[in-house]
Length: 226
Image (cartoon, rainbow, N blue to C red; front, side, top):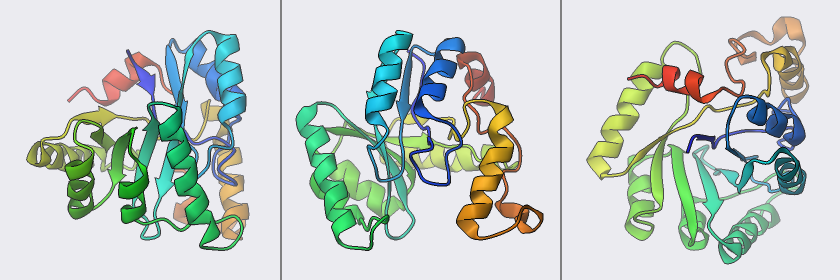
């Protein structure tokens, strides 16, 4: 069953350019039977996304993007209520360590609190993936996450080799920020606010194109044709 598993909504402050309801509605229009919204270190949009998915008649997958103190990233999806509770505890620990609005997590925290969750490693060192694999064998994937910067094929090849080396399955994501391409200008404005910049000086921090939009199963198969 095709599903988009890596989506950032506007509940990731000044980053995502679409509401959870818009993302769910667009997923339905594109023929996606399931969707997961994975905001950074928060489950804040879960209720609105779940309600919208019920109305749209598609499956909603609860998830979260865990961004660690060293910049490494992975996606986590609890399999049951107990696993969801552990991830909530993980986020609470991370937020209590730092100032309001931020979250300080380490790979050891994830290893301790991710029991019962599926994990997709997006940008993590081989050492840390190996640590998670030793504890969560069968629940860990290596994620392909495009940035649409012209270097994705080379990046995908490196990920595929890593997955083969560690005997882990690959999983494709769209790395979504927009429900439709028309939201790209808003995404750039949000970046300006976040980076304390003007639109004239945003430079390479702007989206390179509008490809980080939600895509249909056909478009995703085309993107990952190799």
